[in-house]
Amino acid sequence: MRVQLLPSTFDAQGVANLEQRLTCFLIDDRVAVDAGSIAIASNNEQRIKVRDIIVTHPHMDHIASLPIYIDDLYPSLQEPMRIYATPEVIDLLERDVFNWNVYPRFSELTNNYGPVMEYIPIPIGKPFPVAHLTVCAVPVNHIVPTVGLVVSDGQKSVAFSSDTAETDEFWTIVNQMKDLDALLIETSFPNRMAKLAHVSRHFTPATLGQELKKLTHNGMDIMAVHLKPSYRDEIIEQLNALNIPKLSVMEPGRVYEW
Ligand SMILES: [Zn+2]
Ligand SMILES: [Zn+2]
Image: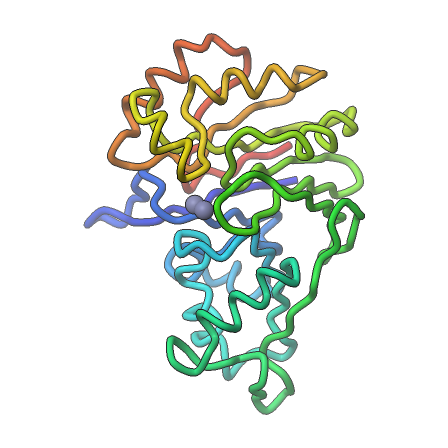
């Protein structure tokens, strides 16, 4: 399975910046987990292929360019863009984003080929298909309804925490996956901002270190994501000090293969 965290911004030479402002993971250039930077950083081949997008929660950094992505592709979509989310999140997207004020309600619109956007409500705790993948979603502990995901292609499995603070259900399904290859987990704030991390329901390196003790099996790659750009260096230093084997920071733009 190939997983790429799309970059959020590029420098003047077109080189991807390492700071992650927006969240969008592409799996096998075909399925997106969140869509923060999808319209900004996807290449032509990816734009042709990605028609399945899982939205973990409706925060702006996870959906910022989703409306633009659909808008850009509008005339050429020969099948609808499929948006997978829990019913609660679908309601929020329809109410707050695709509401005719912020942007058109694409779910009611068609082009020459038919509907351009379709919502697929996802179940909790029960595997469902997304393109060539099988996905299981569980609620995590964030300030809006949010799910973490375990994604499998039949050979390899990768878990995505999405945005969360301390949680248990996610670890239950992660611990059930005996052959998990990678865990992508958020670490938003440095330790000195524990209070803000707590109220906004995010991890610091210290709380992440505690949380990882809930993992009952080891050996998978653990990739920290969602580091707030202003504190990136400080968070990395504190993550390194945890001395957790196979823990590293995921680089935007780089393709990881498991
Ligand atoms: Zn969030
Ligand atoms: Zn976020």
